[in-house]
Amino acid sequence: MTKTKLKGINTTRKRLADGSVKLYYYHRASGARLPGVPGSASFLAAYVAAEDRSQHLGRTVSGLIRAYIGSPRFKQKAASTQREYIRMLSKLKLEFGKMKIAALSSLRVRGVFISYQEKIAHEHPREADNRLSVLSSVFSYAVAKGEIRDNPIKGFQRLHKGDRSQFIWTEKDIAAFMASAPMELQQALILAIHTGQCYGDLIRLRWSDYEDGALRLRQSKTGVHVHVPASRALQRMLDGMERRGPYILTRADGRPWFTQQNDKALSKAWSMHARSVGIDKLHFHDLRGTAVTLMNEAGVTLQQTAAVTGHTMQSATRILERYGARTRALAAAAIETFENAEATVFANQLQTKAQITLGEQKDHE
Image (cartoon, rainbow, N blue to C red; front, side, top):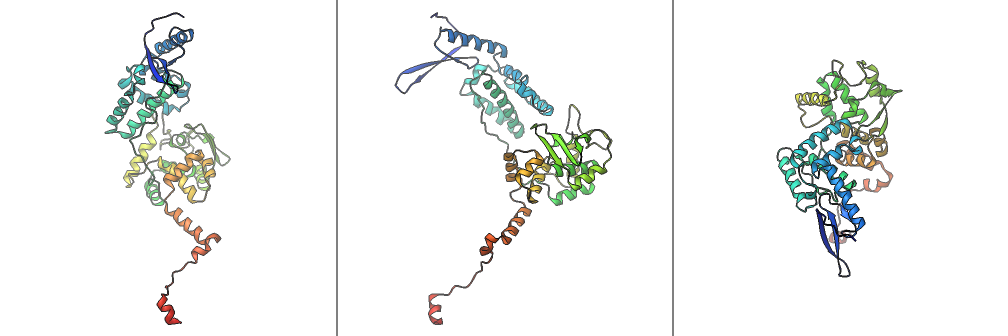
């Protein structure tokens, strides 16, 4: 066995159940485990491979970010998601790009990232959570590729409490919005309520996706193909619309609501009109949860709802837990069912009656 002086190796000791002590070796820069003992063929081969990986990645977090952006995992995401990730990763590279990969194995490094999250969260809590979430994706990919041993921020606690359980569009809200909304916003609302699809997919729906009274699309975020039969109200609107171009939803001048760089135009126009009629807490995105809630109130099963909206069963359940748990329509329907079910006849016949005391019973006798 050849004894070779190698740099950048960490040694850890672990006491085994029989009382003996075993040594474990790790490549410092990448965190990769080195099998065997120093000088062995397997040890040297693993060391050379780890060195090559570290050189390729530049031994820094910036290298891990570059590798993630170039990965199939990243490129499979929707174009809008890629742009948002790159925006946040640019911020993260400025903050942590020069950090050595070796530092990721430190017990204290998690605290460094959490402190950064807390600093950003003072003014932008959701942004702080999203940045750490994206960085966690980078580290998870590096773990999968064998570049680092562990994701140092796996399972971090989110600071933004975005509970929108009460934020559904009620009949009153919708009536107030529709009363003075421009035609293009009215069309967007009806399409969203009757399909339960995401904002990004709705603004990209083409007339070619509407055929034989149904809409067909592949959801950009999930990749799920959905077939949505048009309700009578939706079909009436679609059949009566002027087709100004390839897209169903357009601005007043016929241009689509998105460009290659920006897809927020409809969202901004929507928010401006909503605020003008006194609706400042509801977003366009809440229409998706509203659609699920309305289907639930109408007695549509969870499986049927998921078939329309493209949610998984688990996701649809979570939405109903957030949005549909406490609506008045559901409560009224529950009591109506309770009152008319055979199984609860005994409960509906219960009445109070005055109790006769022992003394009163003797007097009566």
